[in-house]
Length: 286
Image 1 (spheres, one colour):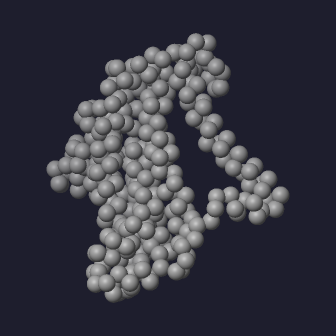
Image 2: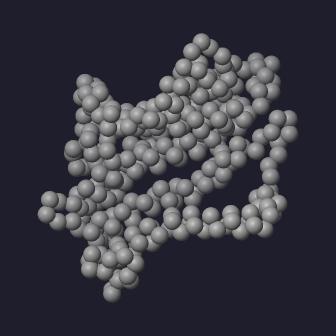
Image 3: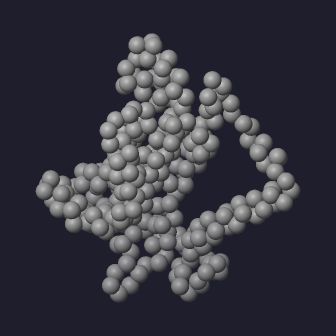
C-alpha cells in the first residue's frame, strides 16, 4: 500500500493555458457570487435606514445602533448558547450513529443491504414540510414540545442521507488490507473501527459533522415550530422578532444577520483542511 498525497497546485500547472484561464474565470465568478450578498449585507447593516439608501450605496454615516441593540437589548449571546448546545449535541449523536452504520454498510455483506442504502438515500428527497404532522405528533407524545430536547431529537435524525453518503464514500476509499491486518492482531469490528478506520476516515467524518452543524445552525422551520419560549429560541428563530405585522427593523435585522453568520464562517475557516482532504478522498491509494 502506498500513501501518496499530491502537492497543492500540481494539477493546475499541468493544465493547458486555456483550461487554466477558464478555471480561474469560473473561480472568480463563484467568488463574486458568494461575496456580493455578504458585502451588501455588511454595508446595509451600517446604514441607519437601509431602505433610504438601498443597494451598494455607502452610508452617509456609520450607524452601529443595530449591533448595539443586538447584544444589549436582545442578549444575542444567550441565543448563541442555545444554538451551540442544540446543534453541537445533535451533531455528536448523529455522527456517531451514522459513522458506525456507514461502516457496517460499506464493509459487511447482509441481506437487504441494497434496500437499506436506497431507503437512506431516498430521505434526501423528502421535504421537511411533509414530515411536519408525524414529527410534531411524535414530539408531543414524548412530552418534548418546547424543550431543547425536541430540537436535538429532530436535528439528530435529519440530514442522515448526506452524512451517510459522505462518510460511506470515504470508507470505500480505505484499503481493506488495513482491516485484515487488524483482524490478524485480534481486533474485533468495534476495535477495528476505533483504532484503524476512524483515525483514517477522520477528514470525511469531520466534513459530515461540519456540514450537519451548519445545517442545524441555520435551520429555522423546526426551530420555530417546536419552540415557543423566547429564552429557548435558537439564533435563526430570533430573526423573526425584528418583523411585526406593521413594521420591520431592517437596521437591527441586518446587523443581527451579520453577527449570526460569523460563527459558520469561522467554523469553516478552522476546518477547511478537512473539506479539502475529504474531497480528495484522503489521497489514500492501495
